[in-house]
Image 1 (cartoon, rainbow, N blue to C red):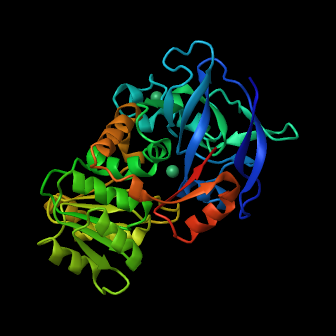
Image 2 (cartoon, helix red, strand yellow):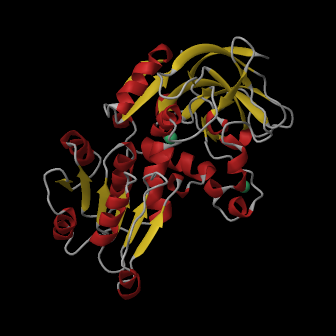
Length: 369
Ligand SMILES: [Zn+2]
Ligand SMILES: [Zn+2]
């Protein structure tokens, strides 16, 4: 059936998001409609509203949601109404070389699923009947959303959906960078530059992996306090420390084995690389703007065998990793409750975005009735 849904839209760049009633089409073959319970407000959503991520407007925002399946399209056997699901902003075609080799986060269908479903259509329209694009083939900052089942991961029903939503972007990106991309081993020295939403999850991933010490670096004292709560053993306030690299080397007996850059600046990527001890690995998690560049001394690649690499979406295998993260939460080892610092009604979405931009939340979540 066709459903009406309150949704958060970007209509004009650099303007506050708007809340409107939209129309959501029923699922076609290989699709499902979900009743959204909660959707995290992520930096990528904000980036779409200011042009850092370029998406055609108008756009239904949202890519970090959990909800309940209410209808499935033809040919769908993996999901039935009543199932709890989490959205995946990577579409997993299952057939390309990346999907076939266990790297669905690099799936070749990404280019076709930026703001429509994979077949180029969109299931959402506004009150006047105009088509609405959907963020990352999700558009889940809406009370109902129709997605490809390749963008949905079924989960157990015992985890509250507002918490479950978080694993689908920020938590996966941070914890996955530690578990999947870097494969940090117990006792490794870890440094994390940037203790925002993703950085906090790198820190808690490192703590779960048994790393020690875990050094968090930021310019905001409040974020460094949070970092300690998520497992940082030491902190460096980069606003007060003249030579961050030197300070980091001192705290880690010669430099970290792993350094995660979670800001997305050329300068801090260089700091990450320079800090490393021999054989160390610098992992760029932050999304840099196109004009950023870094310079490294190639001799340290050869003689010190240092590695500079990146991690996209925590090298996620959503169908395996989302349930695994929720199992860690269930066991009391992954902090999700503490990440949600504010819950908003959908009508409060403009405030949620303003708070995100002001750096007020570890994570803000929009909760639907
Ligand atoms: Zn996100
Ligand atoms: Zn694929």
